[in-house]
Structure formats: structure tokens, C-alpha cells
Amino acid sequence: MITETKTRHIEPDITVLEIAGRLNLGNTLLSIENTIKRLIDEGSRRLIVDLAGLNAIDSSGIGMLVTCHAHMEQAGGQMRVAGAQGTVLKVFETVHLDRIVQMHPDVDSACRSFRAASA
Image (cartoon, rainbow, N blue to C red):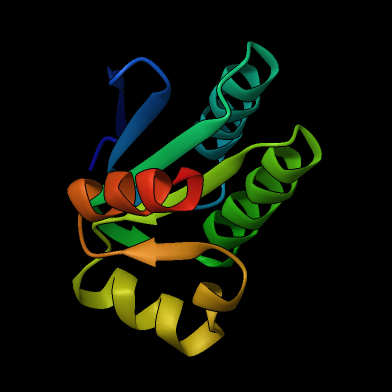
């Protein structure tokens, strides 16, 4: 399966990166990591990584999300993961990713958490 990404903006200051397919070791993973880091370096300070279309992830994909989360924190911003389901969600629960990155069932709830944090 081909991994696809799409970037969109919600409100003026929330960036959403949708990832669909598989997130595993390889050139695509490196490309997605570079995309996320570029968004952060270009000024995104509220980023939601939407994984609703993701159906597989390995340890390299998890490591990439943790690395990007740390990059965002160093830049003074916040990153959320939204939409993980099925086996992807089970993997996240197994490795306790929620202890590092805020997890939300969907993009709307991730957006609400940003609003609540700034209120």
C-alpha cells in the first residue's frame, strides 16, 4: 500500500498532517519526518498528525512521531496525534505513546484541546 500525506490548515494557527497507509522503516518515513520538521521550522506551533487513514506502523514510525514531538516542544509548540484506530491504536497503547504525545480520537477533539490549553 502506498503511504499518502496531505497537509491542511484549520483556523489560522492549526496545521493538520494526514497520513494514510503504512508508517514503517524506509524512504517514505524519512520524507514524512522531514515534512513535519519543515512545517515546524516554518512556524507551525500547533500540529495535529491525523492517523485516521493509517493501517500499520512499526517501531520506526513510533520513533519518528516521538522525535517530531520533541522537535515541536523545542520550538515552543504543541503536537497532537488524532484518529489512531485498530492495530495502530493497539500498538500505541502497548508502548504507552500517550505518555509522550497527547492522543485524541479525532481531529475535532484535538482542536478543542488546543483551544482549552490557550483559554
